[in-house]
Length: 229
Ligand SMILES: *Cc1c(COP(=O)(O)O)cnc(C)c1O
Image (cartoon, rainbow, N blue to C red):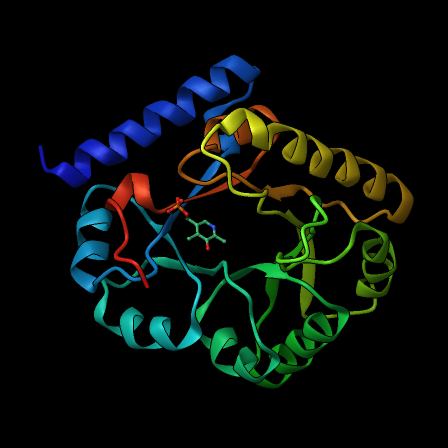
């Protein structure tokens, strides 16, 4: 078995174990293989091991890489999207995980209208209040959800967060639980279904699944340590 196959099986076993602990079905949790800073060969190996959904965090890197990767893969954008990169992003990605302003959401909707197509997105919420973090302040989200009902091309399907870094995954749990609680409340208050929670990375995806994640974004555990940027 290749090392990539071993790692894929390790993550699949981790997902299954977390789902069992939480009483959830494994098909409720999607795996985004985070391929930022990885080569097309790495992506091909992961695809050969059965992975289908890949995540990139820079539009320019993805635009160069995706044409060199196997076809029939699905690409999600998981990084901070600048409005001047929206047009290429709309052409490359089938989901955007981290929309962090009304302006970006509105721009995505307009560009999808011009280019044709529809786009599911998650709103990134800064649940920790860390100043260094991207994401909307929780207080700003309900208004954006209400306004988003008027958009025809983009649909807000859920919420995403990145907790403060900590090697102990239990430290991330309160932030994941808080995002789920906000989701439940905003769903009641706005009527937007918000069926997805994009949360959990290599170190803490098990905890994230226990707290309700429907998309986990895993890089290092699948591909090994990234070179320092
Ligand atoms: C890089 C990145 C990941 C993957 O992180 P790992 O620790 O390598 O699993 C997940 N989400 C986002 C937003 C990222 O930028």
